[in-house]
Length: 172
Image 1 (spheres, rainbow, N blue to C red):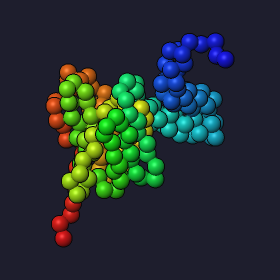
Image 2: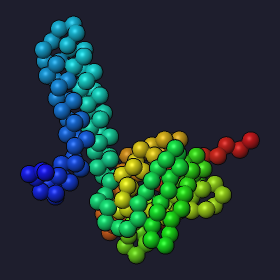
Image 3: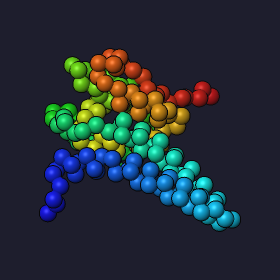
């Protein structure tokens, strides 16, 4: 049994990746400060990796929202599934042709469109939505900074429809 309140544990869990990234960069600074032919380059590499990890952790923090809406997301072998009340469906990441951010009745949703025209709506606040950052990062030519900024913006600051990524099709 934990001596911490559930809210405190949830807060710590949310920030753990960023804390680990900062700790890695700090360890790198400490190693580099020791000098020498081994520790200076090793520390410099660790600082660079830690700073890169900090950037990714900050983007993930902006992307993830507390799960306040019903439904959950599951990603398995490139297949994204959303199980919601009365709605849901599956999309293969390789079949995605477009990602949009829609605001419907004040609730932001991902709109994932397949090449055949079918679309899947997923609320940003569904359980497991934080997994989408890593799934979307595999898409060719996606700008994860733009995606994270759109996901992290307040609902009032978001346009009603925002196209965030489209798969480029080469004409042959």
